[in-house]
Image (cartoon, rainbow, N blue to C red; front, side):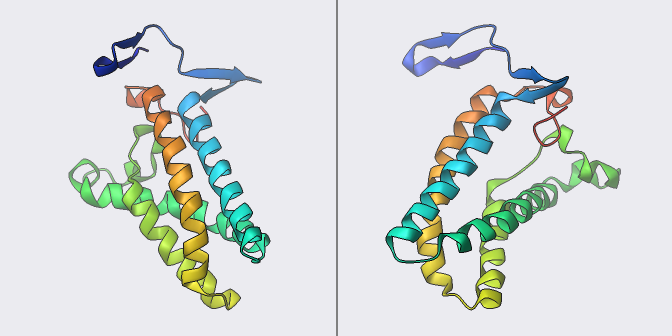
Length: 162
């Protein structure tokens, strides 16, 4: 795999795109996205503590939001690429074929936060104000993973493992 930033004059050739750990291939882009999620959770919890909020609320929310956001990102992608899936519906569940859209993930996170705040009797706007810092940082770090993403769908691991 090659990584290039042509406008900066940077060209890196023959990079590997994964590491093998105990027989599992772990894609670098998955590692970077995971690090972005952890950094986002960390900054949201730190800001919650600074604001006098309970950081555990953000950790609990993150567990729901990450799972539901991945589902939302997949649904969004499938809806807007329906022609790829309409004749073989089982391919909707084939994450190895790629296809997550950040917009769907953010929409799912907002819906999840709305429900979470109602259940936990918290202020949506207060939690959103704190949590958006984590979203922005996680997205900024995670986007760098795209530079290391495999170019062929058969090389894309399910949940970062294959």
